[in-house]
Amino acid sequence: MPHEIDENFLTLPLRTLADAALSRARDLGAEHASFRLERIRTQNLSLRDARLVGSHDGEDTGFAVRVIHNGTWGFAASVVLTPAEAVRVAEQAVEVAQVAAGMNAERIELADEPLYNNVTWVSAYDVDPFTVDESQKVELLADWSRRLLAAESVAHATATLRQVKEQKFYADSKGTVTTQQRVRLNPTLEAFGTDPESGRFDSMRTLAPPVGRGWEYLTGTTWDWNAELAEIPDLLAAKLKAPGVEAGSYDLVIDPSNLWLTIHESIGHATELDRALGYEANYAGTSFATPDKLGTLRYGSGIMHVTGDRTVQHGLASVGYDDEGVAGQSWDIVKDGTLVGYQLDRRIAHSFGYDRSNGCAFADSPSHIPVQRMANVSLQPAADGPSTDELISGVERGIYVVGDRSWSIDMQRFNFQFTGQRFYRIEGGRLAGQVRDVAYQAITTDFWGSMEAVGGPQTWVLGGAFNCGKAQPGQVAPVSHGCPSALFRGVRILNTTQESGR
Image 1 (cartoon, rainbow, N blue to C red):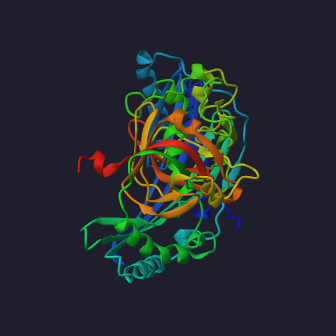
Image 2 (image 1 turned 135 degrees about the vertical axis):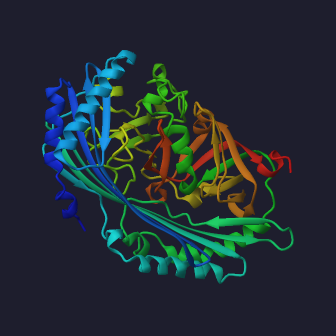
């Protein structure tokens, strides 16, 4: 059901503080000024063997002023919600810009954006998780844990639930005023076991992705928790006894529960334009997908269609307006296998000659400056594409990859290695039991170039993570990646145990 922004957030002195800060920044000669007040509530629950071992409930409230003064950024923040403090923070932001001007190597200018006067946006959810009693949440997680522990193959079980409600008020000197509220959840259950014969220890985790939904995600029909919990013990038992993979070249069918992370690392980060221009080289790295290759780089096969999207329903990076007052949009990043677009904020958009940002500015707290962050970067399905079973049926000798686990990728997003939760041999178009110790390794363009088929809309799942890291000081951002199942030919497979020298 549609929600309105919580009244207790709207009763904060949002307009009063914004008016005081923006007026003072204008008086001091700022060419541009923005005011952002946020309240971020988080609740984290952690259970081990059906017993609560950790509970955190916190709130971060404050505001920030960012200015452009004489072509230089200035920024300051505070947690004191008074007009006098808003004026002081605006003065401090201008002072920061004045001090930094001597070190500034480029004049800061922003791409244009239409004015949005007093608009609101609320993410799509039914039940605000913060209205549900904590004891009810703990009991649900404990019940699910006990189901896992009842199985002979499960020695221990962990359960975690991360919940966030993010509220933002933004106003700038051009007249844009936005107020937003979004909710997100990340539930995870993991079973652990040991094989008595080999002494091998391993685990099996739920595939349920983090989502921009409410409490209904855990109690409704969106995800079949009962079915997933029922199969985990047998999956774990089979994994513990599975033989190690024989290294070599295999065809892969990759499930969305694994492929989303490969998209995140090899496409999402590689097509952040600030990274491609070298602005993140000191910390998060650069990108092989440099601007001189736009429109010509063959990123993958001709069926590859990747979009950036700040609007998809229930996406973790979906917003009505970003932290620079830019409306959420959807655009092409890779079309017909060719690099055609980047992710942009207003400064990068202007400096690179774009007419408009595509809305990728985000700050993870009221005390942090907005930086260019990832949109929901997704691989599109084929309109009449095959099912996952049909993709598997087209493979004579291969591996079906399910669930994410560890990954490694170089600083240019070019050479990578990924593992997963579980792997199945494919023999003659059929699954033939689990194998283990699997990692697939490739060059980004070779890997995506080997993609022969993508599944239909029925295979498409929106995966993602809460904790994409970037910037100095470090910030984390939630982001989703949708994708169908997909078939890749001739990918190099490593045996991770052999690679480790054991």
